[in-house]
Image 1: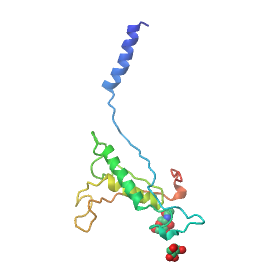
Image 2: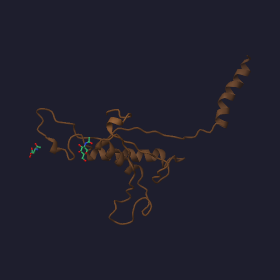
Image 3: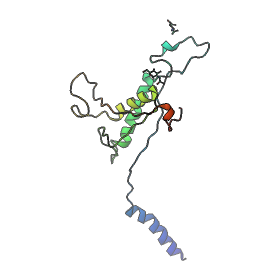
Length: 156
Ligand SMILES: *[C@@H]1O[C@H](CO)[C@@H](O)[C@H](O)[C@H]1NC(C)=O
Ligand SMILES: *[C@@H]1O[C@H](CO)[C@@H](O)[C@H](O)[C@H]1NC(C)=O
């Protein structure tokens, strides 16, 4: 094969896919761990007991909630306020599915994350009117299955 021919083929291989194949993002799967949590138990000489921790052993702390909220805001930048956007600005049930392990700290992590990801809900649509409702908090389902049936649980 002549050198010119090879150059032409390489050229076509580079140019054709860019012209004819539209690179389109169709599906995104994001996996993350829970935020900061209380210890699972204390050590023998520990002067602190479970009541030191607001939620008790192993529960998500308010620091953990903040971390997840921040991560949710980052996901919003990446997939919602991005150009082009991948998801609608407001929670849309047909676009997103959230799954957690059946543990308090991971469920609350998911909820805190979603509060950061969807802060732009509209009163009367995404949540009720009225000043007793938390500002712009859109309730979003977090699904789970019992631990012994959870085959995606990595036991983290
Ligand atoms: C935990 O420690 C506090 C203060 O040190 C004490 O008042 C409380 O009774 C303790 N709770 C338990 C469950 O041991
Ligand atoms: C979660 O919270 C419940 C009470 O709502 C409690 O009984 C349970 O021990 C907690 N722990 C886990 C791992 O979910």
